[in-house]
Length: 297
Image (cartoon, rainbow, N blue to C red; front, side, top):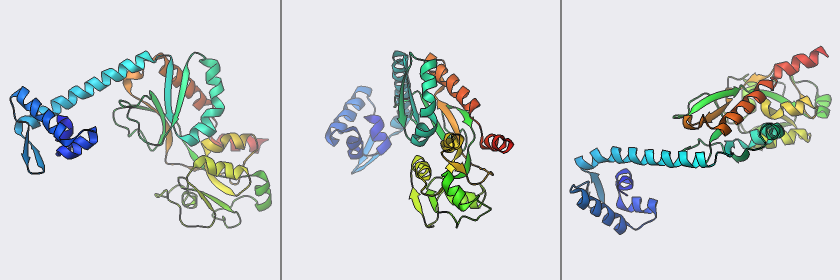
């Protein structure tokens, strides 16, 4: 309670955050002050201030609570050593990870794999996830270990019939195609060949999607030309479901990363998943590999 009041500098806001009444919060602080024989907070009407003794005590209590949370989290991880909880992007799970998971099941049949989807940063202390797969510009996540899985590219793709009808894409000649727009992979990046700083598309004609997997599925159905992340369209390009409208992919400023707290790095489940995932990443061909192979046929 003391930490909550000190952070909010308000009994009312601290009580609301903890789901108790303001009077209960005040009584708890008073009992703590009587026990310590020190005044920790000064009240001036609705305003609350830390005393010198309170400001000295606060960081020590915060560190102790963090250590307690870490200890409880470690105990939970060890107890669940036969299971692994992974959080990743929904689009990456649907179009890249799911087709490859059967090979993990064959390789590690004893590990129960729990998948979760999110784009947010992971609080490994308060969540149950041991590892995360995230899409970002670099290892900028504090307090965790991050390893790059592979780089990413953007490629214009469409159904083979649409490519046969409109022909290859030349330079900025997009007008001949019905366009499919993704909020996170806008055509502005293609027009400026990877130099666009904004990830927001202008109000151009066409259909807009805030789901990267949905724009790929729309392209598969022949609805238009999509600018897709290579990781999400590579399998469809390989089996002929989608065709590349241009053989010059644009490097995307974000890559895929495996992220986890260092304390779980020795767990057998984490090591097994990491080893399998990097094997899959190593065998995943880049767009230039597909280009060269097909041109040599």
